[in-house]
Image (cartoon, rainbow, N blue to C red; front, side):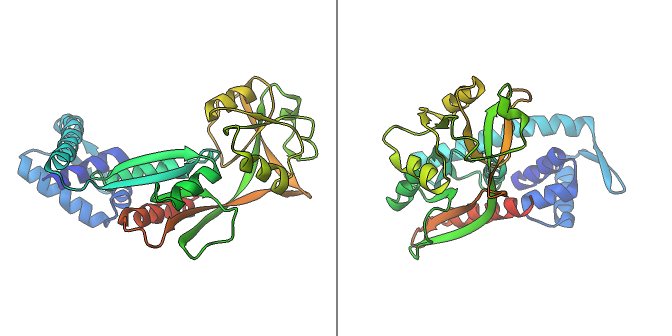
Amino acid sequence: MLQRIKYFQAVVRNNSFSAAAAECNISQSAISQQVRPLENELGFALLVRQNRKFTITPAGEYFYKKSLILVNDYERICAEAMRLSGQEEKRLHIGYLNSYAGTEFYETLSKFTRLNPEVNIKVTGGSHEKLFYLLHSDAADLVFSDQRRVFSEEYVNLPLAAVPYKVLVAAGSHLAGLKFVSTEDLKNTPCILPVQEADVTEQDYFRNVLGIRSEFILADSMEQARLLVISGNGFMLQMGEGADAAGVVQRLALVRGGAPVAQNMCAFWKKDNPNIYAEKFAALLKEEFGEK
């Protein structure tokens, strides 16, 4: 019954059998066939079907809301019981590039969690070098990061997309009136980096590879970096389309020689990593980028 309840929740959440089927990775007919037996077992209708559309009944609405709490509690009970039993917990440690502002990673994380509720997920954000260290030292099972090295045979290197850099400036900045800027245009404006002072590798990359000529202002966190941008202290480089509050931050295209400056985003994991969930997460991430 539990799996049928989850399918029913997916149908209501997506307001669509087809979308729910895609989310659950089964066919539309299969998910429809799972909801009817649930109704028969419960003894009342959850949905009123009208051709390809449906409406939820009052009983279905009540059951849906209460079942969300039920399933949440059930999964937490199972996780705690497994811990007490001494069995090895199912875990996945993911490294995430904190300068990436797109939504693909978040959407993948959400979908993976729904499909694999038994897995305890840990996400660590950081710079490229921090993520490389986590992966190299086996502290992370998979990292979502940009490509700055030649692909190594030690890892599975999964290219996802070439993503253009965006220059974030305060909405009140004179630069906000432009649609794109070059590194030459930015040479007199400080570049804000959300890195620790000791992370000179990140500064070298921005200076020697991206061609940033201005001085750097180092921020202790991404939040502090964003506040520095909003308050007009400089600009910050990010990849991906973020969801900044309107009227606070302006995003400009970064160009070089008239062409956008882009970087390859990839998923990396060690070939000898026994964690099967790393590859599953990477497949969902690839799928998410393919839909954009």
